Image (cartoon, rainbow, N blue to C red):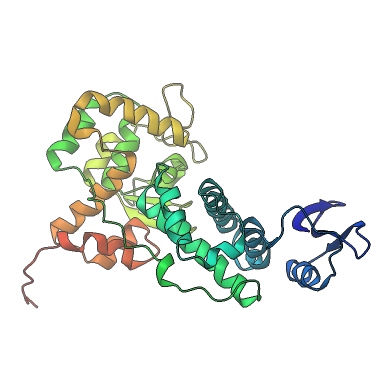
Length: 333
C-alpha cells in the first residue's frame, strides 16, 4: 500500500494504491490528504506487500503539511517551505531514515542534524530546516498521523552571531576612489550614503531623484512600502550631471543598460579582489551595514530613525546596531 500525491485531470489529488481482500490491485483518489490517510487505515489488506510494517513515509508527511497549510502562507513562503522540507527529506534518506514511524526513535534528530551538517549548509540554515520540519511533525500529530513528539531533541542551539562587517570612512574613500569613472561607483555610493538594498538600487529611476527638494524616493522595496529619504551631501558628487528621464534607470552598466542583481554582485566582487585580503568579506550588502553603522556611531539618530531610514520592517532588525550607539547620554533637555 502506498499513499502519494498525483496529478489527475490537471488537478492535484491524493492517491491510495492497495490490494483488496482478494489480492487484486486497487486505486482510489481523494481530494484531501486526511481522507486518504483515514481510508488507508480502514481498508482490509489482501496479500502481504513486499514490505511489512509502516507504509507512511516522511515524504508523505511533509507533502501533507505543505498541502494542508499552503493557504495560510504567501506564495514566496510556500516556495521556501517546500525547499526546506525537500532538503530535510533528502537528508533523512541519506541517513537511512525513510518511514514516519522511525521519527519516534531518539536517534532520529541526531541523524538528521548530522546529515545536514555533512553538506555546506550554514548553521542558521540548518536551524530553519529543523524549525520547519518541527512544524510539519506538529501538524501530523494534530491530524493523528503521529503521536506528539518531544520538542527538546529537535531543537538546536542558537548559532553564533556572525560579526557584521562595515566600512570605515577611510575604507569608503578607498573603495569609491577605486571605482572612479566606473559605472559601479554610483550604485555603491547609494548603498553607502542612502543604505539602499541591491534590488532598490537597480529599480531606481531618474524621476525618483528630486534635487530641488534634496530627496530620493524608494518606490519598490523588500517591504513593499515607499520611503522618502534626504540626499546625503556627499552623494550629490556621484550623481550624473544630467539625470535620466523619469522612467529610465538611474544606474547603468558598462553597456548603458540597467544592472541585474547578479551582474552587480559579480562586478563588485571582481573589483574588490584587487583591494587586498581584508576586503574579501565585503559584499554589496556590507555597504548597507556601513550606512547603518555610521548613522549609529554619529549619535545623532535613534534606532527608530535609523530603522525608518533603512526601511526595516521590525525594530529588532535595527537593534543589531545598538552596541554602536554612544554609551553616555547627556540629559541636556
